[in-house]
Amino acid sequence: MDILSMTFEELSEAFAQNSIQTFRAKQVWEWLHKHQTLDYDEMLNLPKTLRAELKEKFPIIACAVKGKQTASDGTVKMLYEMQGGDYVECVIMKYKYGLSLCVSTEVGCKMGCAFCASTIGGFKRRLTAGEMLSEIYLAQKESGERISHIVLMGMGEPLDNFDNVMRFISLATDEKGLNLSMRNISLSTCGLVPEIEKLMQKHLQLTLSVSLHAPNNEIRNRIMPVNSRYPIEKLLDVCREYTLKTSRRISFEYSMLSGVNDSDECARELASRLRGMLCHVNLIPVNEVSGSPFRPSSPERVKKFTEILEKSGINATVRRKLGSDIDASCGQLRLRQKERGK
Image (tube, rainbow, N blue to C red):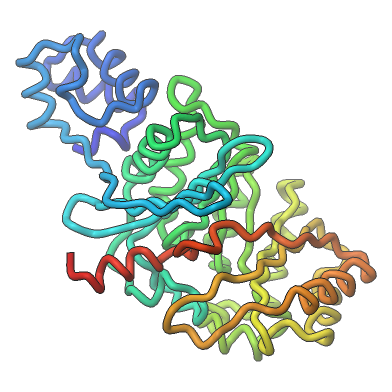
């Protein structure tokens, strides 16, 4: 049983069914989620016999640190090895308000976005809620500081792993555990319309980020295969409905790709599409990815694109480029590890 993915109530019930004293559930929960201890041998107030029983019946399925890269701006890229030998990545980012962690939700990605390193390595499997939690716990130990914000924008498509991600969010915001604020969580999607509709029914106070990356179907079809299933008109319709039902602003992620989606015409078309919606556009100067034909737009082009959006009444900012001197794009470090054959 995946103990790290259990709620406190589920853990208590499982212990009772295995004739383990009730108060032990509280002790184990606090070791796991208060102290972020991922090894039963470190839970010193538990009898050795109980620790042995827990190892057998309730293994802690978590990731382990395989490697890391540190950028000159303080950004830290973590490579985690999962049980079974798979690899995922997460990124610790420093801001004025504290540390933010970019969390992976899957091993690889099946969405096939042409400019993304995660999809180059191929899709292997979905992560459990506990595995996602362990990314945070190990990052906090690595940094020596509390992670105050998380962005589900690492490897994988979060809404493709809907149930596990919802459980992860519930556990991460549990006041008996990590106690993250729901408003400090951002969830990114490439545009899975049925899952956005499911998320909308939950009325969560998180920030939904939609990876748009193009102002029309012609360009989006070329770089994002998901658009063939859910064209931009259908996607934006559900986004408008989402903002009306949740009263939450949507952030549209827009990677600036030189000569692909960064023209003045693209900016004007994007502004026309989004006019009147409760939204914000986050322009992203992409990191170059080995093996990808795409290159980042020039600073001058990004500036002009931003100006056109703002003059059209669209709130837009340029994301601060972090980790440019390391393999900062999600999937790159995993690819290097696979190339080494280790």
